[in-house]
Image 1: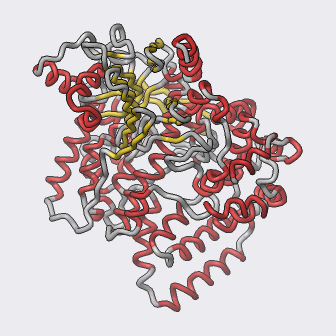
Image 2 (image 1 turned 180 degrees about the vertical axis):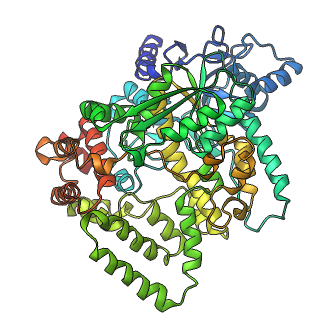
Image 3 (image 1 turned 45 degrees about the vertical axis):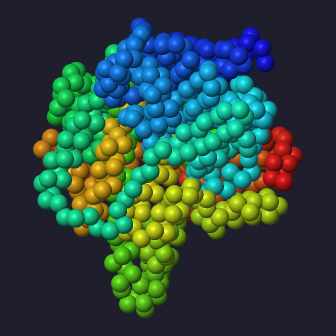
Length: 639
């Protein structure tokens, strides 16, 4: 390609992700190579233009994200003779790369997707942060490598890569996302978190540069007070270094322990005025706005609340769902993306940078599933006749006697008892599934199920599989899997895409890699104390938070889909999932099963809201990429 053709291609790619950086664009084109950036200006707003070059211009860098220790690194590099032209964190990477090559990534403390091009050696380095807070996608076509922060940037350069991947369909419907490195597009891949990719002379090499480690043996006892003080210090530092910004900054506040802790440490660091943002619902059982208001009042924040009602959503939900899928580039099964989208929109009206409490549950054992593991440990000690026959039978009889509207809770109790008898790997996979194995087999046609037989089993990255079969305790296994699997592929994807849809940068202090490593070094008994979740975190923040916040039960950032799909939003589901409208790929889905699911849910006989949301997102994705009208592509891709 000529330089002018490369420039036009880069402009299309940059335009496709304009929302990630509306402040300015930057380009580098030379000798058949091009880099482009859309910049959200936060650090060195006036001078930090990208791409950034080394002194001699041989190294070019583009960065999506923030490097929080860049000032320390900058001082070190200046002391060793490097000359800086800007005050940006991106330029630090250019100079650090000159000294350390790809190993420069190990010195970075932050969130990043970064590309470094070396003109002299014609070598490209791509790198992604340790926890995967920032995305990075790539596709290789012969000797050509195309990459970007979102899939849509790659498709802007190479539209023919919009080929569906049948091997990704079953994993999506099982867990609500597609695990790295695969995407829903056959030839497009994710660079895994904590990895770098080098590309030179048409050869690609991918390497891991960081590995989270839990101890297989119980660590030596430390006084709890000593652990609390070290955790308090790490939390304070992690929040403090994420407050650097030349533009307005705030905090997402749900009223739960994690986000409230971030507010507390931001307040302690002296952030004034402290702006906080939350979302409320018209259904009291889903609404946390009062809890958030209590924390906001305690710290006297400038608090903003967006109240969402079913009526508000009814008028805009179809186009909002399409907007969500557009920003995810793939079907995405987590319905909390809706409130995340709206609260990000609210926050962006006031700030450019926001801090969140993501990661607390994964690091400190805050989920009910972690309590479920402890329950299973006790339940498995019961006599066989009691745990295998009497109690499950009693729960089923009780469920059968209840009216339809109350069966759901009783059936969940039956499943908890059944799951508690499974080996850990099976139990945890079962608890995390959005769609059961039985329902999965009914959801697809026999023909597609036969094609998919080779990739029906759950797929996990090698390190997750290794941990599942390691000698770690079940709770440590669960924490590792949560961090490396659902947090990485679900929570962080949701937060990144929904915030960047509104050009809002989200920083996650609880996912500072030093804090993560410290949490992994602690015994599970300090995190789940009896049935008390996140015990050591509560100890650390007790001195700062209101007592009611410390006592608050976990709520979860979710929406009342079950009720909405039985109300006015039922019509939208019927429209999108109807075979007559062609939104679902023909030959893939069993429409008899889908009709049954919709009918049972609408009548209140069963709660199928999770699978209906999965189907709705998948149908919307199909309608955007026009896969539904080209069924031959599915069978060609599967062969």
